[in-house]
Length: 191
Image (tube, rainbow, N blue to C red; front, side, top):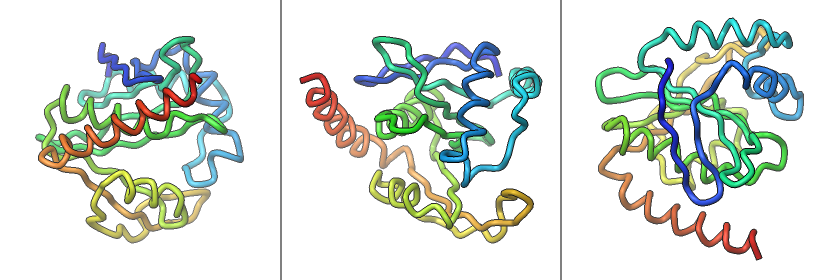
């Protein structure tokens, strides 16, 4: 949906996706180094524009670009979707190769979910074949709440997923812990 939510952490920020972001999104989503755990999309920018135009019409669907807060250089995309009452999913998360925005973009999406949208819980679903991202969610402090058998369709094959969840009551401690980490990492990066 069209929204005006923008938020900066330390080094990175989220801003609403625009039609002008379609070429960057297609480049990320069709990069074989990045997309092996994602469902395929069309390599045509025009098709991504159509998808974005449909997205703008959906209520309670928040899609963001992740970008460098100083330069505006795009790093990736992330979103909150499937908002139902006070719970939602977050995903559509993809960052360009060698981006350092993973921790901050995860912090930012949770901050949007809990502080801006006032959700009670925020969940994510990751292919069981993606141990690196599963480990990220575990280390971020999310609880594993389910294994979803045959949840995703990836390249014509049904794949199971692990669902992680963070509750709003857990966010203040995780928020402080991760903000401290990203602040420390940003200081070292700028030295």
